[in-house]
View 1 (tube, rainbow, N blue to C red):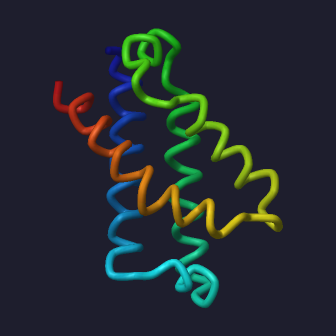
View 2 (tube, rainbow, N blue to C red; view 1 turned 45 degrees about the vertical axis):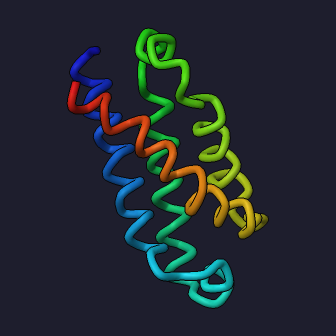
Length: 111
């Protein structure tokens, strides 16, 4: 794996870990009532997607079990439709999809 890809994946791991800290012990309704939490969660997801968009196609192909296209698509949706964010979709991503993604990414930075 190229060194630049390893750095980008490390950024993804760090953003995922931050996201899990932000949502730990919280419930979905906290996103609607805590503006700072929502901004932090959305920003972390954006960082994951931005870093993923910079990973080379070679690395994406080698690790095709990771949903690269969906990750980047989520980032694009959040960036371009920021006034129409689906809080339920963000919550599911943060609490269900990010933990799975993190378990897929960690081995890549330690390999």
